[in-house]
Length: 446
Figure 1 (cartoon, rainbow, N blue to C red):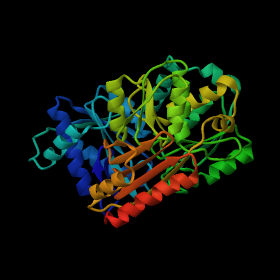
Figure 2 (figure 1 turned 90 degrees about the horizontal axis):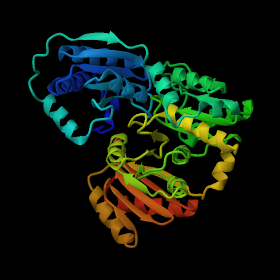
Figure 3 (figure 1 turned 60 degrees about the horizontal axis):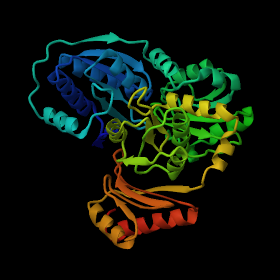
């Protein structure tokens, strides 16, 4: 799987040392071609991470690069390290939410944002070109990336740590044994929280499927009940997504993370909001309360970040729990999302469940089918079925009505076509899903 989300595959089958070497060497050449030399190297805790990191380091050195080795840190921490060091880019060895047998390379540009399509085309061209003489590279170690990330969070003009400390939140925390344990526990302790954690070890032995969707948060829900926590917090292995469990032990869905963050930011800094095409209408409702209309971008952090930059957005992100605040950096950031959510809760004392209950209710259903060669014919069939819908073709096909929508698109991280729908009721959302899947079958997409 190759795209704006990186180069992903099953270790040993798709993602091999040879593949990693070729991409890392080409990225080193890309950095040198742009007149830079330094590259930040980081990884999550996956057990194949040390092997692939060593391969990347060697390939970058062979290309004449200076490697700034950060070790196991969150993806947003690595993006901030690229900016801090004025590096030519960064490579993060992480498959994010993919299952344990996967790994990936994520490529960050000199601006701290994942590569755009033009840079990808140049990277792939360099893969097939003869290697240019690079000279000897070297490696330096950066052990302060997490500390800097936290200091930048607390220095944000929008940050109000004293208000959070005054609430003395009891927080249940699940870090899936990914890269999040150190930064999330330090953040919460600095915010005066009473932390009860599980899976804080950064050893990559994921005890459950790593994506922080409600179906995977049973242990966290149990911890919330056992400790009588005010909130449960879960991150994915590379710590760019945040999911919430309310004080009753009910997972509320990742879209509420972004909705809460939007509300927290717009209350203090009005301005444009940008989200991806598969984000829930709860975010539109949160922004509408401040007189702001939401603009939508193709799925993928790099796509959202670039639209945010173009529109001068003050906040945005993706409905999978990825919050982006340009005042910090143009990347999804779970520690940032945690700070914003706790500030919102500290503001008026309402509990998580009370905030959810006060919002207009929607049901979002996510499904997928195997990717086939006839996706365009599926789109044509759906356009004929839903002639009354508002159409968006930025990324696959999104059909929208005032209170519901359907999005069908090829995934950038798995070999599937994603089918996502949202409506006021589960029956209406499921009906949209069923009709889309039926179109996939009838048109031979699988």
